Length: 384
Image (tube, rainbow, N blue to C red; front, top):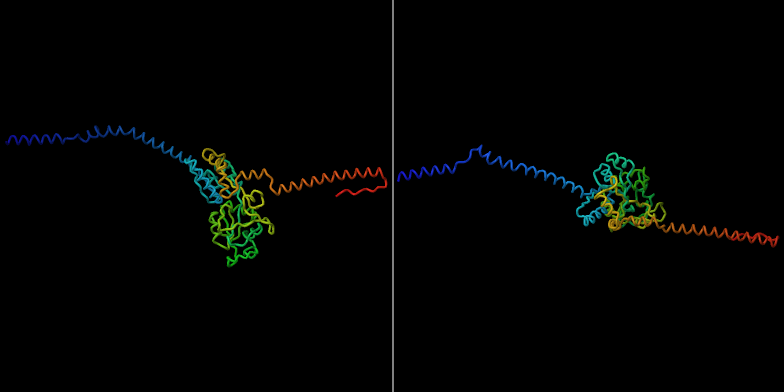
């Protein structure tokens, strides 16, 4: 029993020792770790290379699918409408729209930071040179429609017409008009009678256009003029301020504001800001709307601009309250009512002259014949 028990114990310990025996640490590293490490090296490098390439391709796809468009607040709603509609039929392209004013868009283009600058004024010569110096490319100008710069007042303001001269005296430095009564306007909702002149911010193309066309280019804005960063913000402020007057694109009209008729001179009939008056030239503050690119556009940018200039894009120009290019081109080909009238009058004058000449000749011939027949006959007066 003792022998058997002792043998079993001894045998059991030996068996446990054999079962618990592991390779030495060195052997473990050599036999288990090293082969697996070597096996993983090549796949890991390959995986890293794939990720790197995939990242580059993703970045390229992102660049190709994003069109950066910045600039005119006048055109902001229009550009947003373009972007929304274009993305529906081109889901892989994402136009990114920002406002900030024409000046901001043009600055971004000059520095090569954006794809398209939107502007409600033309680029200046020094801006074009800056773009060429910075990027090596000359800006490409594309007209996408027309706008009538509207004069906004509160909906309950009784005024109907204002002249460019009066606007200059309201907004220009040293201007004499500061009160509504000076315009023969009984603005009862404006308790103190003082005119609150509201302008766009100085980076806006609308600001620059108004200064050029109304203030003469050199004259500064009057001190105390309230600035608004966006067209929608300006319209909202006017709707809440019975004493205010402001200017912006006609596409931002709401039921809470009124757009005044505008005349070139005081006392002359004014024209409302409409598509028709912008086309026929009777509204004095009509202007083009621009896109600018660096050089000839290509790729996704070129496709987007082609769409903007096509039927769908131009339909949105009209829907947003602006004048599409097709209407402008048609107007250029067809004489306006005034031109037709002038041409008709001129034609009538020429016909009358011809008729008068023929009659004079006939009278002279008759006189000569009469003289031959009767030497005492007097010359007859030609018919007037």
